[in-house]
Length: 406
Image 1 (cartoon, one colour):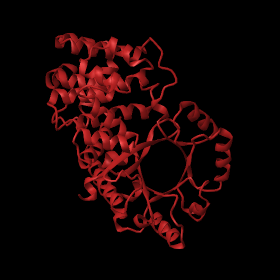
Image 2: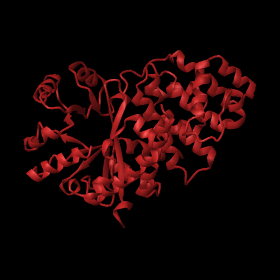
Image 3: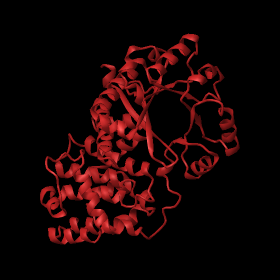
Image 4: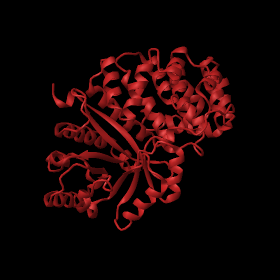
């Protein structure tokens, strides 16, 4: 079996102070051995897959200013395969156990001249990386079990470099806020997907209109009733038409009215797009990273299930993925949300317990975004999906979400 068939990509987002995703760190895991250390061939495969994806995305990737952070060891740093990557969008993260020779420093300088960016992995713990500080565009600092005084000390330590500091392993919103106040500008971790409070019983009014429409569609109300429902909120009408006419939807003609949309789309597709509106309705208060992550979840869960389900159930998989973060977005327990919106039992089972026919696909999606190697391998094996299939679906989901322009 070749490396391309047993290497699985995981990803973690990197966000700015406004919680907008500015890039992803892509992890490559060897599924055959379970080893979490990148191999040269894995990194070559990673470069090829990411290069193909970025090439297919064209202006959408560039417009989003998304960066791809990839780990490179000594062999990969000197490999010609590295230059498959689009330089201006690629950040080369030097693994901390690399032997920093004069040749390594020279190679990093040459790569920077080619427009690649360089990131260092926790140089505060690895002083042998010091010769590369002058090359660094980013310095990543592990914030696990680190108090704010230490974080500020590191900030002062690297003040004289031109590098942007990335606080990584930030998993709690309180720590994010403290680091934000201390002046950190970029962050890596899933703090934004872990709410401080999900005990509210009241759903924000900005979501009520979408819930009303979702229930009309699920109850198979007449088109005229649904159209009138949209007229209650012109913002929702505008958003739905914008999404339907986006590149990601792929229609050959422009949809100009809600009535036209209802005729062309059919109920399954309308339900699918109302699902998107549900997670973006409160975009003044919802983290941009949280919205985008939920949409990527929807598309990836759908694509992973493509070999197994018909179109209607693939739409249900999309709903499962998008709605899986709805409790975080609405700050309301999932069980309470499901009392307010009528969803099939198969969807509810996946959302509440990660079980049923859709549950395993959602679990695999979540493992990919958390770079959970053991879980990725276990779920892919359970579903009899090859790493190649998982990788292709993962990259396609990222590209599709970028094409929406959200």
